Image (spheres, rainbow, N blue to C red):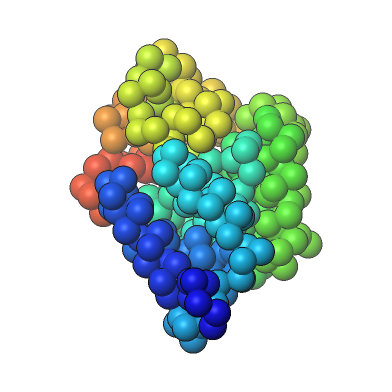
Length: 287
């Protein structure tokens, strides 16, 4: 190694210290991920390359990514990928970053459909496709439809389906909520709809309000507009006894439960996430 050329180990540790000084709590992990991303290394490769010189031709790219992180951009946005239910999902500007709590919908769906032959799933506001594609990956006989009003989100969902080898069982529909589905019937409808009240979006953490698409966050004046649409129309798109699973805000459980019950759904239930917050409402169409 030439004098003055930093090695890879020193480089990521220097970045760690820089991010830590900016009060980024995941400084060490972020520094490693940034270096790995720029150099195309996995975790083992980073360890094995600790004493290698950092390629000078890659420094400008690394510095650019570090600047984005210091500006508050989430790591998933910078890297363009997020792990969800053990699978990697590509992102673009029209999609939310998949979050761990949304995996509850996948768990419910697997339990609900594992004994059904060739179940059909609809994912409303599919974004990256993470919910429906994770279900298809774990239910080999299932088929799924992803609906989104954002055409760019569907482009990303299609790319993710291709990358995961699930494109032959996944179709996309461009439009608003149930409009593109026609008269199709489903065994399960899932959705992580926009559920933030319009007036509170400005109070969200910067990594969300500045980088997630507002259309995927804003649920109207009280955050419940999408649930009213879903509640009033979902029964028409479910087979008798078909299930509905919706992610909700921490303070919306009882309101969404009452809404679905008033629309004639059965077995309406609220489920809590690992933090103890209401996070999902499930229901069943009458048989």
